[in-house]
Image (cartoon, rainbow, N blue to C red; front, side, top):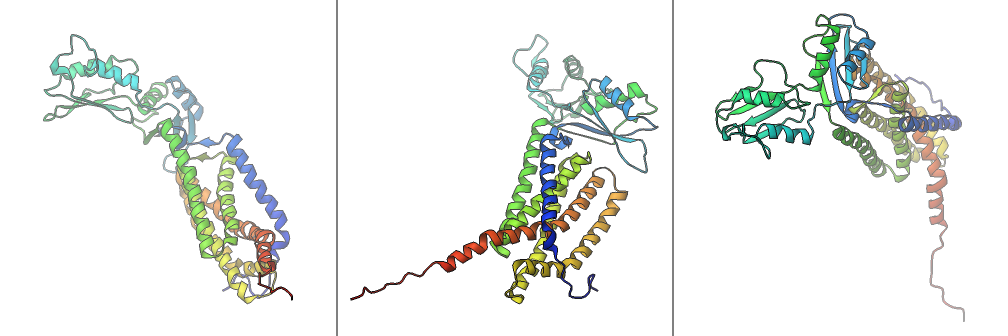
Length: 406
């Protein structure tokens, strides 16, 4: 059953100037928000430690923030997580990470008799053959030739300023008696944050462990941010090449601008809504690019079919007829996708909810841009560039050898 019955042709191109103005405002405004609006970048891009906690009883975000600051963390971010099963669920993010600096590593190696120097207590039996620091800064792994002196290891590591051992009688622990492998567990930033919350809010409100603890270094965050931008750019470049090969070079510019419009517009609306920009948002943007190009390709295919059927018709007439024929299909497909996404948005939590929201915005923008961004730009390029290039080729006189008059 067709959504729009009959052979009525809608004049989409008559109002293209207004929609192009709206699209320019959305795109330029989104770029301005990204550059000057201080978007909320997630831990994926900024680096830091992120802890998700399910509290045992009601707590206020302000009290959590004050407790985290009292534990020695600067400018913490406290976000309420919607969870029907646990109404007291929060996500706490700080800029500090658990990584151990190179200077601190050298200091630890020195006191453990592995570095240069040492003291009289550093006998051959106490010198480790291997010292490894975990990337997360939460443990140190040692290997010895002989059975290690566990009390000596604990005393020396605990005496290093800025290094705190995780509480427990089995720390450090002998992991392998055959290899004389010792693991020293350290207090990570997540452990320190949880300890500060328990000291301030009480053990009756704060659980013993967090639901989730994640961290990422600032350098890795910058690399992820650059990789995210490159991934979107590369996907758009390959799509442009596909459109140029699949259809015609004159169709590619409009499609590429529409894809940039959808991706940038979605992220700009996220910034305007105060949502966090992270790797999940980038994944949603790439998904939107894929969905939008599929919708645009179908409309382009109908335009190409009508090029042979409507010979002599203007390009604007061709676009109006093609879009009118595909309008029902475009709306039904978009509505089907949107209905599916609403389940994730309504019942999802955390990043899943934001992912569904980004896709919802992107699907709407993708449906709109296929009609009012890609096609008007294709018509503009056709009128101002490609048609003139074709006319010049036709007008070029043929060179012939003419015999001189006698």
